[in-house]
Length: 398
Image (tube, rainbow, N blue to C red):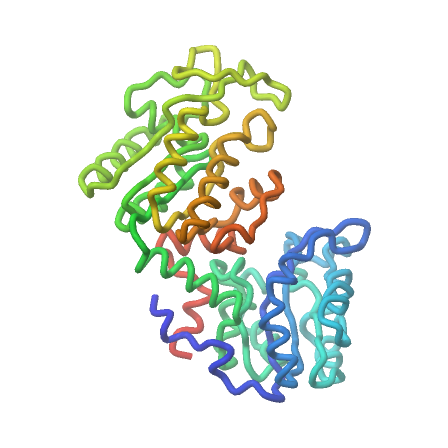
């Protein structure tokens, strides 16, 4: 897709306008309050830019999966309080996102103030990308700003259809995502390494095939590694294995060889007798029939880290082991620390959302130590897989 044809918020005349902004405020709540406000903070640059230009800022978002029904536990009302606390301007909360009630709240707000609309997903039309629903949303603005990278892979009314009814552009957060992920894929500083982990090969086959056209080094870890090792003829004991994907794993390895991509896999493991948080970890170069590998071993940590330190661009998606269990988190932390070291040496380090971000949270690792940590798990994956993102394609040539 042609990102150059998508307008940026700073390229549009937004002064004194009513601006409809799609944000990703799908945040955790606890005791009726926002428990983690990082996703709200991530939109700060765009929201403040609009406020500084005397806009009336109308924010729309979803929370949880209410499946088209009004469910009070998924109300965005607590989020409105946090938005007001963060931005320091009046925030008007509309108890619906469309209809007379929403219209009234939007119209009564002044320029330089914020309106937060109630959960979009209280309406089934949102996830159906319904044109009439999108038209009602579009009434709330003169310009549409896409600032929810975490939802651009969804063809929903607030991300896709709404752009048919308003001139649209992307905010600073989405610009940063597109810039880092796009540059890493299309014009990376080399050598370029991708570190791919996670449980299932089936989830990552498209990703791996797309990356093989771009990377110099492919590092495989996590539960998916055992399907590759089995494809190489190694016994993997009780480790996670997808028998139906062995042939596809062989094809990935053949493609890597044909393209001259260096492919690294685990050479030792942390094993356990059972899948348990309290299981003891045993280091081994082989996997006995009665044991399962739950993390990469210390030799593999060094092998992977040494390779990462030779690279100028590193993209990481997916943990190296069952990081939720303390005894099997070391491999994932080793990757994070190697990437931090590479970043200090001038490399571009990109974390591709999802469970990799959860590794950082679990290990209390500072996200600012990396060049870029993606805010969109599924969206960043589909971006790197080379798929069309409906929330961005809707803005092309608009």
